[in-house]
Image (cartoon, rainbow, N blue to C red; front, side, top):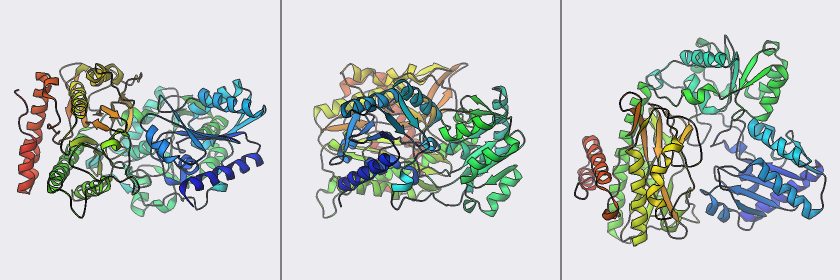
Length: 608
């Protein structure tokens, strides 16, 4: 049975289930009980029902239609992956479709079918409370009944993946830089300042950061499935006991953290008298609807942002040392890879062609040779030619494209080292280029450099700076739909917030010792794509002022640049960056061919 036939069969089975439960529509978000961007396979119900595997999107199935909303990063991929299925792709102008938009679509569909009594379902365990609140308001206004207590995948998903059981491990203090006891006391103080005396931490990277523990439950992200309840004098970690080694168990006891089975959190909240009357700080943007409702029944909820979110964005000295160490190793791997790729492409056609997948495998293997490398930090995006225009393209055996001696290869990749997380994008000229490819590449590079050169007041938001990355391409009537930059975790999630560089308003302030990427891009459908990305550290530039210091160390391809489009200070920045890359990485290379390549790749460009 083909993939499209399988999806069609699943939709029909779902509709039978919906009729049996009195539902007119069912909503499948991308989130899991922990509001994670990357989720364990067990909770990928939107992918299971629709076949679309992007990280962002919402699927809705009614008794007669099915639709998938996703943002510009995934428009092309979603359309390709849903061909032949009942799903129509709705292009969304933001990361998520709003509750009002979903309800309006469902209501409109009902009008066409004559169905006037509507009941809509969504899994309350897999939707944040803030979205559930909006959805409840929207459905109520449309005279639609909302149910959050029904979950069809449990009954319909054959061979559903189980939750992982890999053991967790202690993240050494040499890398963490602050003891878990200290972190918990800081969190308690923040909670108390906001009028509460307890909190439930639900996001997996926040739990891992708080307790200085790491795991392998989520693809490419060293976290583990758990909940953490922080009480005035102790804490409780809800986790499968099979994952807790004797060493970790002793460690948790030492820092006054008890354990309970992961699945017992609902019963514990309902039955434990010790929770009665507590004032729980609850973050409605990260706490799922089911947990929120349970807390509401046993105590007083104080809605506020979880303090861990911003605490972990400010890196301490040990974490910063770790980033710099990880970036050195990553830079060495990238230089080795880029030299290998250039040599392979110069050979010409062979019996073993270089493809998007083989590029991914080679770079992953070179990173694996570096000390402390545990995994990649996200699935590599290796898009050649038209595939580079698909923002989050991932090659498959069916789409794998052979690299040829012309055009651009967009390579977005990263790794998880025990001392830091990396994220880098380079667009590489494989030979002759069109004038449009060269111009777009240069506009992207100008945007990257303009933002990288910024000096700005402490507390500035990323939105206030985002235009610097877009200004040059805007003059060419070009733009991109994704954000310009995001925070990066410390051996944690490669995407970390709440601070960002983004065109739409994001008020989170920027402060010293935050990490943030700069990654503008231009994407021309069916032709090419360009993106240049470095991970940066925000550092002080005099009292009250900040600037961006590159953590990523890797040459930027100068061959596609249209020099006439570059300003003198942009060329100077590029050359200074290349001097730093060469001086730092050259002593770490043990192969003469790699050294020669690096020296050539970082030669002075232009006349600066």
